Length: 341
Image (cartoon, rainbow, N blue to C red):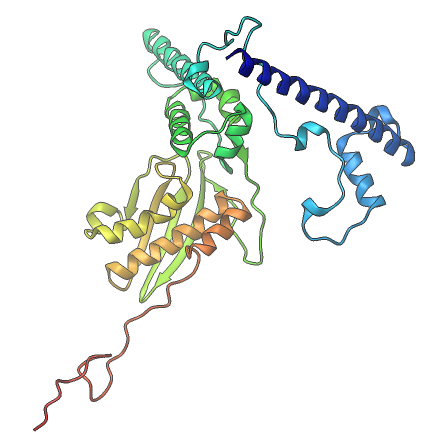
């Protein structure tokens, strides 16, 4: 065990020495580049470095990662864990033997924030304040950071199950009336999405008189036509022509069609959906609602997510229609029974 500890400490020491050496070379190169551009090295930022490299080394390569760059070593060297053992061989962290101490420390910290919000609510109830006075968190055009980003943050590899548990715990915080009190902690794990208009015009987000964000969408399928309004900060309520969609669509497959865009984007129980449909049957209407909902949700995501939706077929109208009956046949494809005499 002592040999393993010594080897781990040696690797960490070598990594720290490498980072320090690379950092010194980067600082030397940054100051030299500033002098070449005739600017002050003390105020020469990373944006200035990137601008100068683009000017001095123009590249026609389409792949950005293949172009010349100069960045701090911490940006391209993967982080490594700090020393985890004391000189006597005992681990610093009490959760070391779980195998993922940083992950469980993160879960414990997140649960502490959840308890903090619950205690604030209980305190307000004790004082007779039953209606929450805090505003709701504005998470429009943002999403949870992905599993890889969380792993980089805690310098540990986590599984899909671990990531799902973590995001579910964060969702529990968002469901609390006073989640605004821990806004800074929540935003650490959110990434902003800036919708970029592509060749197809995407309607911008609109706001009603209460400040609630919403977007509209239109879709068709067979003879059916649907117009939907997707409202943010909802609880997953879906109405079709004034009725609950569970009552309107009795077939499970039709219900799946309606909810598939939310499931694909991982936004279940975040939006309220109000649909108006006419024409066609229930199958065509559910397909029209699916297309209209997907088009409306484009306003809440970025261009890369829109492209994923397009590749999944969410933004393409289903061209299938009932094939006409042919003369001399029993149906569109079915033939009459052949008789020899």
